[in-house]
Amino acid sequence: MGEIKKYTCVVCPKGCSLLVEKTKDEIIVTGQKCPRGVVYGKTEMTDPRRVITSTVAVAGGKEPITSVKTTAGVPKAQIFDVMSTINSVHLKSPCKRGDVIIKNINGTGADLVVTRSC
Image 1 (tube, rainbow, N blue to C red):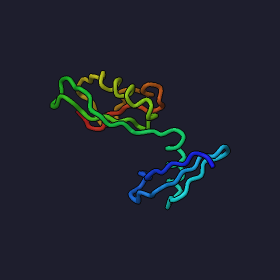
Image 2: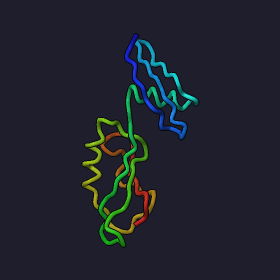
Image 3: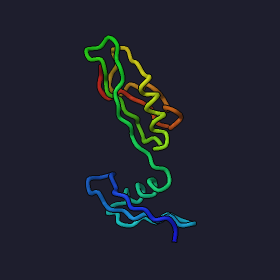
């Protein structure tokens, strides 16, 4: 018997209770009600990632901040480093939804994009 962990899948609204077992040779996921639960369980066990949403400062716009997010999940171990980078960003108006602020932020493979025009 290997390492066993419980997760609640957050990929869809069902919120399946997953039991994930990591053995020497494989990762076994049970409790999912759709194939996405298997992928989520395996990822959570081996390389958990999170999409980061935040705000950044904007100069010259109607509002002093705008919303941003990563285009993909970043490794949980890098969240604080990525947030440090995001906190150092200062944009100039105008900017529009979808603009890429930082490509491949901190080498995570995710881009940082504007989610609200400013």
